[in-house]
Length: 207
Image (cartoon, rainbow, N blue to C red; front, side, top):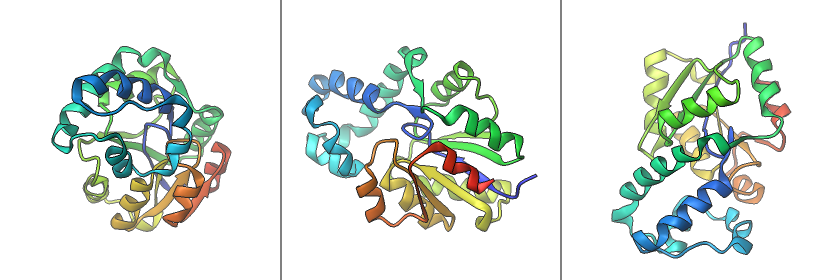
């Protein structure tokens, strides 16, 4: 058995959702009054944080909760088409076989995550926590760590955004950033995570 506890973000970290979420965001843009993203600009926007993206698109802050709720509903409609990050399936099963405790903390809906995990033969996680706190994930991490009495020095929070790095630092756990999701390697490195991974197989070092 391993002493490590790996807590994963979902969107962009486990599920390859970046372009799918762009599709949803663009569909909702006329209804909620913000600008659509041009596909030729999507890659370059990976250098922006979530807050910078909201400002760039002109999203009304008061509408953010309603937009997120609607997006989660829209997300579920196409859940069968959402792909797993390439190379991650075998790595996650290997971590599970090595006795690593694994869970998910995400702002996506629990039903979306559960459906995705079932579709991809990944019903191997020990816990799942869905939160509406997109700016303060550290509160969810804190609650989870205290409830389950995880030693912080053994906890690794794995995410694809700069806000995941912030959550790990505020919670006093190891921050592991992955470059295959939303934020670029440049944006992630600028926030100094404890670990910066370029391929799923690198997760095995925490087993």
